[in-house]
Picture (spheres, rainbow, N blue to C red):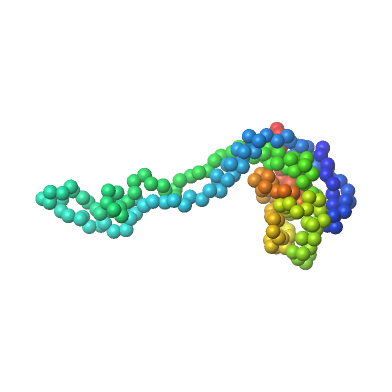
Length: 214
């Protein structure tokens, strides 16, 4: 069982939290992390390049000249691929699929590795509460300033229904907010530190109960 210190919003230590070893004590494997992050980035890729076939290019409905008697090659449309302004043969199409499949257990293992690395380097900061009734940016900024590892890129992991923190922190530079049920490997690896509440940690432990090396 792994443990981490529990802080309040003033940066004072108020206790410790026990964390499951299968989620927070998994040794890192660079190959697994690379495969999962690459797949995540590839699956987010938008298909932009799209060429039109001769059937999609506007115009060319009339036969340019009669079939016989001109001495020229027969042509059925000025939008055929050999004509300027015609359709494109074998060009890129928006129907291309770049999705890469990664097994669920491998994604789970990679997330456990990323979280374990944050904990082992003391960059995972647990706070007893991330409730800001007024939803003021200043309140979130003041809290982050007094917590350990201040000044680095911060990932705030909150309860899915906690929208006040997202609204309050959206104007803070270097701060990203993500619900506990949407946590992913790429965001965790990019974080200089991860700040979360004890309730969000419980949500993570419940949702990701099967995560780990097995």
